[in-house]
Image 1 (cartoon, rainbow, N blue to C red):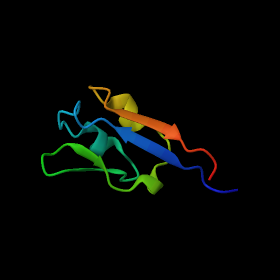
Image 2: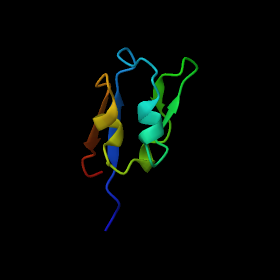
Image 3: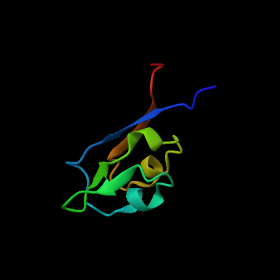
Image 4: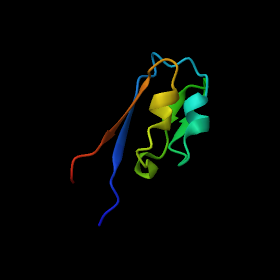
Length: 69
């Protein structure tokens, strides 16, 4: 059975660069941009744990399962 894949949607306009989502991601999916705001750096490693979505104080992130490719 193939590993399920996820999309991470990020609203950078709402992000205040707190870094919580980056620290909580166990798979290294998120990283900081030049301003310290979160960006998706490795989408295919997302496990769908939703730690980033649940811990973001500004509700900037949404994790969704990808449709079968």
